[in-house]
Image (cartoon, rainbow, N blue to C red; front, side):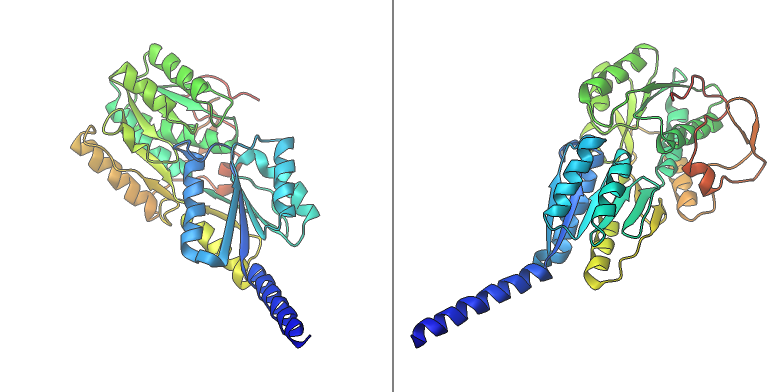
Length: 357
């Protein structure tokens, strides 16, 4: 009888220690809009997830769901993740904004982080990167390297993040090449290799010898490589498998330091609802290696521009600038405020075409 009592006590102790271990382990979830192997946006967010695992080891458990459509289905998936016991959930695409906040209202003890959105709550933070700083560098290189003076831009959705990028790239291409023209194709997708390839091919057939993209697959790189004599830029990830041509540089999103810091805040009880919008200076936006296909003087200019963006001595939206309709926007030397940039819904002067509703 005593032996049974001792055995029962040991089992209970093990159960309690297991429960304590489970409680000590912070569970972190990630909702991805594309596959982790997309080579772009979702790939880099997943690299951030892996960095969390490497940083915290057995103190953390990460889970993820990939290729989650934006909209109603996202709310179901986020709810399931909250029900699974997640302490912190990162939702990594703009279209998850309303679903994230709807689920957060039902799970006040779970912390949520929404990428690229603007709606916050006591348990919802927002975070994004100043991708438009990287677009300025790309625009400079594009304006210098185009021979046809035609630059094609594959856009995803007509939201401020994407519009900012188009404007920034155009402003800086135009500064170094007054004859440059931009053609924008709206793909209405973040990740659809077939659509992205078709968009790139159409732009190339229209004479574009530079392709920029705000979509997540490497399909435009492949289309440019097939066409020949077309340069491209990696989006969100380095896409260096296409270097030195057609990919001559890239914007790299480095989410790892942010993810590590926010998980640590949950662990030590200091997490608060915040809004983060970092760029090249803090390292959230990186400029991928500029390949030797770029002339040395253009590379030096691009790197100097990158440095001025990093140290804050230059702002990509510095006047004089007008809106597409010719109305004044920024006076000489005036810079755009974050509120205007966050809600940007207009093209700058010189870009043709309309922004879809």
